Amino acid sequence: MEAYLGIIAIIAVIALLTGGGMLLLFRSGRRTPPRVEPPEAPPVSGVPQAPGRGTAVDEDAATTTVPPPARPIDPADVTVLPPVEVPPPSAGRMVRLRARLARSQSTLGKGLLELLSRDRLDDDAWDEIEETLITADVGVAPTRAMVEELRTRVKVLGSRTPEEARALLREQLLAQIGTDMDRTLHVAPHGERPAVVLVVGVNGTGKTTTTGKLARVIIGDGGKVVLGAADTFRAAAADQLQTWGDRVGAGVVRGPEGGDPASVAFDAVAEGIREKADVVIVDTAGRLHTKTGLMDELGKVKRVIEKKATVDEVLLVLDATTGQNGMRQARVFAEVVNITGIALTKLDGTAKGGIIISVQRELGVPVKLVGLGEGPDDLAPFDPEVFVDALLGE
Image (cartoon, rainbow, N blue to C red; front, side, top):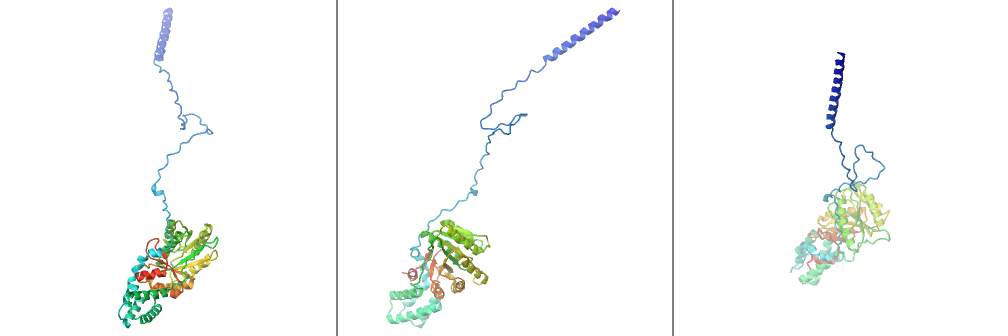
């Protein structure tokens, strides 16, 4: 019995061993073959490669960085400066603009010629002549002087042809305007220091525009100009003057809005000295002649400039259409600063040309410049003979 049990145990052990071997053989047949890694691709030249996972990065190693693509330029971001213009010279300007002056002849010129050419000049006719002159803003005193002289000459001549009447009137107008007054614009530099022109006047007379046009006159004659925007009370004044300067290549010195005008004027003169400019033109505020404090400030501007340079010209800008109101303005300005000349604007197309006679008689200073239109080169040095001939319709 024991022998049988031993045999059974041996058979059972053999069976277990045989079954285990078969199971191991079956599992080894199903095992997945090892994965073969593909070869690493060579890096592209100039392009940095991201480090692989688990790869140490050397912080000191040199790397190549590719810049981001450039942003397209927006045309709105580009500031285009206007081309610098070359203005025409001042010589002959008034002759070229004679046609515009002739628009004023209907009252002061043709009207007087028609009256003087009448067959009979009685008291009523002379009253009409006097009224015509006063209406043209010649002024009461100059008008009476002209009428008295004309009456005397007419009595001496007796008969009067239109040519004789024209000659008489031309002679009297030139005598009243004055052909012997010094109308030279003093803008010659003093060695290394520029000449200084101070431009004054009330609001609305075209003062800033006249300043810009005067810069064109001087540059057209070959001078170098620096502009001082000392009108700090009017928001658009500095921008307006900057536009004038940019067009002809003149430097512009400006200050903060509401700033001290005297400080701007002083800085403009200093800039003119540094830049070796021939002329510095200072545009002052269009201050009202009724504001005493503002007029005192105008005197301060002139005094501050004189600490650094000589003020060669003080030009008073007057509107020819304002008539006797312009005369009141002129008197007040003459009390504050020493006016050396007058720039008369808006003379074209107006019957107020006689203000040239009255303002010169009142102030004792000459009209040096006249504005004859809205164009940039419509400011001209005043020529009495050209003016009178245009009024009389030569």
